[in-house]
Image 1 (cartoon, helix red, strand yellow):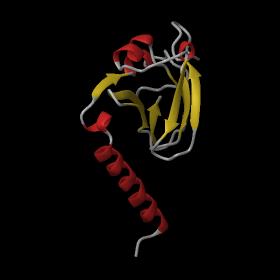
Image 2: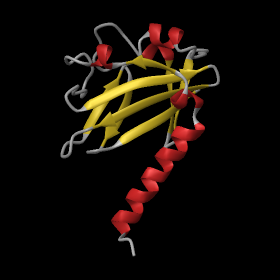
Image 3: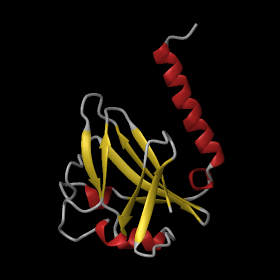
Image 4: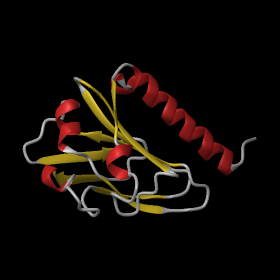
Length: 141
């Protein structure tokens, strides 16, 4: 008999494995690293020692993946996405990009493309509150 904690862990792994097998962006798509625009205090609340973010993409799907590897610290991090990432990953933007949480189903947020990256502005970007040992997989559309 599994404890509640074990059941939750099992459910999380099941969701991740299903996502990996069903997502073309993850299984065969391209990779765009976002560390270079968020590290070294370029983004408010982003500690590259513990946080990792990137985009997986293919023609039919774009995903922002963000992970907090800290066992003890919650981060309220700004994740900046530069214009070249939007171009190179094939994101289509009419001025607004929508991010939908597909791992937990917790939220959907819209951001102006111009607000995702402003040179020298640590407060630009998508803000995520990341609990210890947590991750987000956000569909970009």
